[in-house]
Length: 107
Length: 117
Image (cartoon, rainbow over all chains, first blue to last red; front, side, top):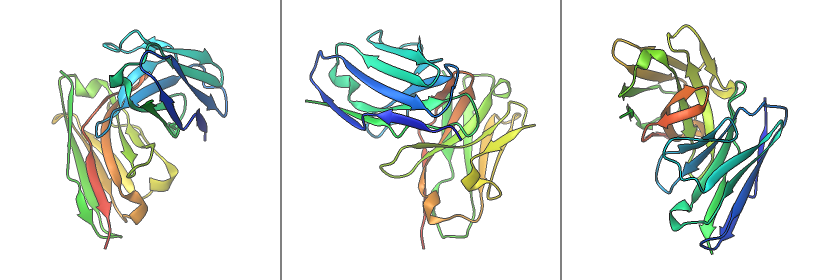
């Protein structure tokens, strides 16, 4: 199974700040990496697919990068509505595994 | 507008069965693979199972193989998850999701399954 190691587990940042979340796959997943945002009490929503492609309707302050085994999600100019838990997920091979999540809070 | 609406959750005793349903609308259901993803209380996301667009192929995580069965009725645009021999560790919110090459691009609102005596 491909293991997804996500860091940090939690993050506190101020409005307007830039934050980065990392995700490390245990083997090459050839950019088959998705990022999801889960707001409190809601279902997850797809933010980014194929490591760096923004899903429809997602604000441009979100961006993804990476290749091979290392990937990251960057949020520029943090807004209050970005308070959420973020998950990475490899879509390369079954079982389709998720990272443990990063809880983003406002400082 | 794509909509996925789950139903069928609730409280069930260990060892018993439960069947979840997911009614899909707003897209051509029989063109897409579909999946179930679960989330235990205060925990992360876990993929459970995926079924191909035509139902010919199914994939499961190891912990549910032989106990859970994913199926679909394309005429009714409905996805199912038959859960047998339920265990306390199956307690979670179960989400129906469209599973494409991009990942899980649409999710339902989720249905809670509690396995307890």
